[in-house]
Image (cartoon, rainbow, N blue to C red):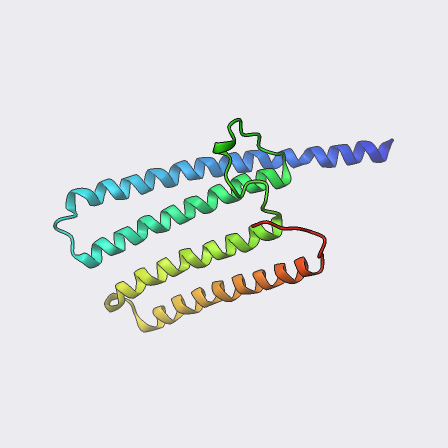
Length: 172
């Protein structure tokens, strides 16, 4: 009886994660505000901007969109994996990947998203090359390659673990 009570309490503590996922939705709102602030700041000046400056601005907007997508992915799949299934009334509103990302797959997708975000940041740095010190540029590349190698290793580890469980079907 004590064991069942402890197990029930431990299982119920998963709900402590719910405010964290709600906090991510607030972070998503803040990111959306920054996105539109940048967009509204750019639009009036678009005709006077140099092509490079416009490309850098667009890359910043893409960067924000990727981070926003990452937040949604972590928020929804984390909630579904650790707290409760999300019941969506209309089947057409349910996202294709919902309910299909386990914690391991989510880690790989987050790592891949970080690589994509880092790639965009590195591209922005390369487009501003004349203003970047060579040693700083080297560190940008080293950090980016660290993200790439980490994502590859996470993917490899996930695949090895999945290969060890042939009866487990995974959709991602």
